[in-house]
Structures are given as C-alpha cells and as structure tokens.
Image (cartoon, rainbow, N blue to C red):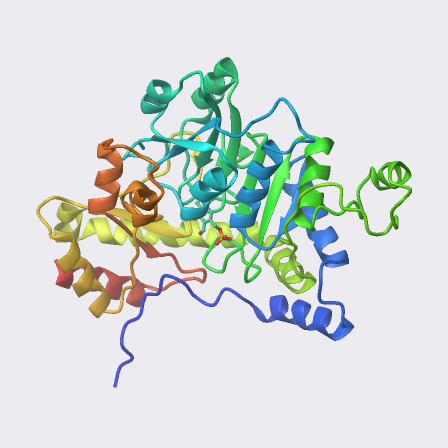
Length: 397
Ligand SMILES: Cc1ncc(COP(=O)(O)O)c(C=O)c1O
C-alpha cells in the first residue's frame, strides 16, 4: 500500500553530527552552561556582526532580558515603569508579555498585509510622546522597509528591539535582521531556521547593557562580569564569590543545547539556501495549477529583503471558507498553522489583562481570517512530492 502523503510543519531538524556533538558534551559530565556556550556566542557575534551576544534558554527569555535591561536601575535614562512600547498586532505571545511583565504598556500597531510586518503608516499615527521603544517583530523571515523605519525611529528617539525569533539569516540590503536595533532576540526552537532544541540569543550594542544582561541571566550574580572585582571591593562584608548586585532570573542555556545550536549555526547558510530553493519550487508548482492560483495568494519577500523562510505563508481568497479548507487539507496530510498567532489582540489573555479598548486592526484581521502557513522541507524535494502537495490543495478547495 502506498504511504499516506504527509507534509509536516516541522521535520526532525537534527542531523547525526548535531546529536554527536551533544553526546560528546553529555559524556564530559558538564551539562550546564560552559565553554560550548561561550564558543557559540563568539561565533554568533562574528558571523552575524552583532556587538555582544548572550545565549539564553529561549527566544522568549531573550525578549524578556532585553526589556528587563531597559528598565534596569543600573541603566538610568532608558525606560521607566509606565512608559509605552509600540508593538505590531501580529506578534507572538512572548513578544508582547515581557513588555507587560516589565511594567511597561503596549501600544498596538497594525500590519501591512502584503509583507505581514508592521505598517509604517500606522506606526507614524501611533507614535506619541509617551512611546519610548518599539518591539519590532520580523515575521517568518520577511521584514518591513528597514531604511524608512530606522529614519523614523532616529527622528523620534525611539529605542528599537528586534524580535528576530522567526527570521535568523534574513537580510535587508545585505545586513542581517537583528543588527539594526539596540537589542535583538533570536530563537533556536526546533521549528525555526536553526535549532538547539530550546534556546535563544539576545544581542546588544554596548558593554554596559551586556553586563546587565549577563547578570540578569544568572540570578543577578556578579560572577563572570568585567566589574566582578570592583563589585567585590565595594562589598567587603560579603563572600566575594556570592555577590548578587542586581535582580535576576535563571535563563541560562545548557552546554548540550549550545553544542547543537553551534553545529546547526555553522551550516545555516546551507539550510537557508535549500529551504529557499524548495519554496520557489513549491510556490511555482502551486501557482501553475489554475484552480489553486485562483484561490490563494502567496506572500513574497519585501523589496530589498533576502529572506530566510522556514514556512510558506499563504492567504485564502474570499470565495473559500478558511475553516473547511484547512480541515480538508489537514485530512490530506498537510499540516497547517496560523501566521504567528494571527491578530494577537483577539487572544483571551489580552482581554484578561485589559490591554486594549475597542480598537480595530483591519489588516491584522486579514492575516487572522485569511492567513495560514505550511512548512518548508529542509531537504531536497522531488517532483512526486511536490505534485502530491498540489493535488492535496486542489482536492481541498
Ligand atoms: C516572533 C516570535 N517571538 C518570540 C518567540 C519565542 O521563541 P521561543 O519559542 O524560543 O521562546 C517566537 C516563537 O516561535 C516567535 O515566533
């Protein structure tokens, strides 16, 4: 009997060589943060051309640390409790919640349905004197017009945090996303472009922020900081090995995940190129089918963007019922999901925390009501596989 067609959102992303690296670490008996994390951070800084990079246990933790650094009492003149942070409505849960958890208030901004990213026109309307920062979310490897955005932010003195959790490896005008802002976050969750199981990276531009991020990552400890000796001299009444000079979390990664992450990071260019080729083949084949082409719109990379796709975002045109179509497609073996989480302000958590009063975000509603995405294979695909996918779409209409 022929095997049932299966087009997953997420394949097993780990190669033997990634797992061998992890096993080697396990066999040393040193499983917590250590040399492998240092090595990954160093390589990441060099390749991505960031100033400082710090590995954490998830992309969510990276967002949390960036915001906690901005409100930290050691970094005066940045954000203070009650300040406002702009954020697009098509975002992930933990793009938003670290803002609230840090005592800051979100101002929601609609998105541009063509790019799925923040709508610059709406952003301009929403900027007011209380808006001090922007949590920018780069959606699925695509981004907004970064040139125009950076000019606006500079003029309005707005701090940029780039949530690059879905977009590692994408470039705008040959510059990696995640290198425009004062802080950036990256995620190595298993469905993303590269994976360490769970894991993430937070980056920043100056040493003072880096030191704060480092201490917040590990209990607020002074251990391992450039200023460790100085702090110890100022606190002679304490055991110099156990000085907690800041508030803190424990968001450290393990060396197991760092070794897998580094192994994948070393081949990131290769992964991106295979996935981008597969995307072109798949989208071309789907568009070639008249019925499919008439019922769907495929989202393309924005101008000046060299994307790093990990899924294929698609809009269902009006004449098709989204729920019924998705159900049929899933039955035919094609896994689907919303674009990030659709219009996030529709989530019950936003209502519970009363973050918003009756505003409309019409473009985000389009993403919510018409958008979905399918996975993007990480290995070379053949015609039989692509034809099966086209057939699954055609039969689900
Ligand atoms: C835009 C965005 N930000 C943050 C995250 C959180 O990353 P993690 O799953 O590593 O915590 C995700 C998760 O997929 C995401 O899509």
